[in-house]
Image 1 (spheres, rainbow, N blue to C red):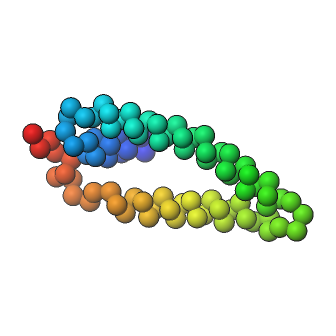
Image 2 (spheres, rainbow, N blue to C red):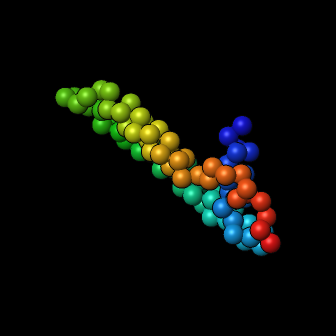
Amino acid sequence: MCYPCLTSFIRAAAPNRASLGVTNGIIQVVVAGSRIAGPASAASVFSYSMQEGHDSWLVYYFLLAIAFLAVGASLFLPHDPSVWEDHQ
């Protein structure tokens, strides 16, 4: 369900149909970077939180902060479906 919704938002982000391929390419680069950085950062925070003398719940605070950032970013998505129409 998430992937078709993201596809709709990516299509709405493209200024016109001619630049849709470039927009998709940029999004794929961002997604690939996120898939690299996400597990590495979560594993680093987890290993740091398990060291002696640190809060063992630190990794969950980190993931909670990421979730709040994602919800905050979703508030910038267009609420009006008319912006998804082709304006050519």
